[in-house]
Image (cartoon, rainbow over all chains, first blue to last red; front, side):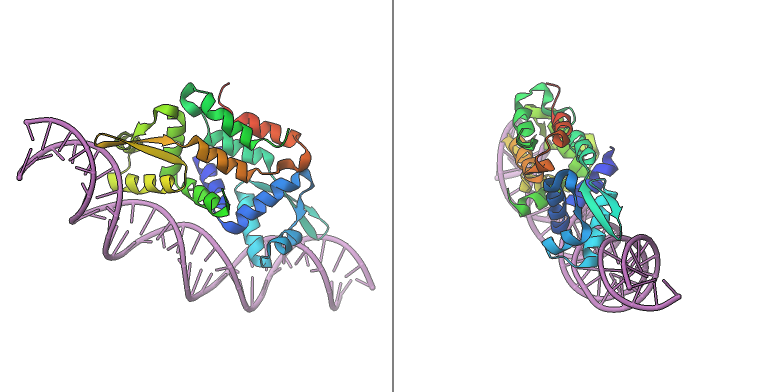
Length: 110
Length: 110
DNA sequence: TCCATATATCATGATTTATTGATATATTAT
DNA sequence: ATAATATATCAATAAATCATGATATATGGA
């Protein structure tokens, strides 16, 4: 993960449809969701959705797998991990209390 | 934190200078850094830096405090916490293993 | 092979965003 | 009051981004 990767990723997340897609796929976890269904759920036209999925893919935030004629998309947990690690590197000037709350918030209900 | 807050924040982070500023302030922790010094370190003109600091401020990612004629800026740990919480809400479809690595990466050296 | 389904690519006009020189405001010192 | 320092705002141009209609590619079935 370098600065350009991170800029790509944040840029990808700074648009309504793409943020919606990513959050939806985060919720889907390992099950993922087909491109068509994502588009239906979010009410976005086919070519617009395709372009936006490509941006997220290129940013390393999602992955995909072909399933017959359909293509299924998944949140890329390694990608988001690398991004957040880059963003928060050497955080809080050695005062861990500042970060504890951040960490707590990012966790699923463990 | 709603969708628009999140879009503002990711948009703020999707530009080189602002990403640099945020990461610098994350490293500074509670000490923060004066606006002038930030500009010097990153090699950015005064008015450009001011505009970019304003964007980060408006996005809720940094805070500031006047100190005499100077203004000192700080990473807003509450802001980034809220943003990451929003992004990762209901993550991993009930399969915590997917998130563990993400959480580990966001932590400072505890 | 021919058709239907699912997704991707292309070209374009409309909107947004970034940087910069010039200038304004706020604070402190003399 | 005046000058110096630190930061913010304004106006304008240049560059990037977005959604869309039209079309292309890939897969599966008859």
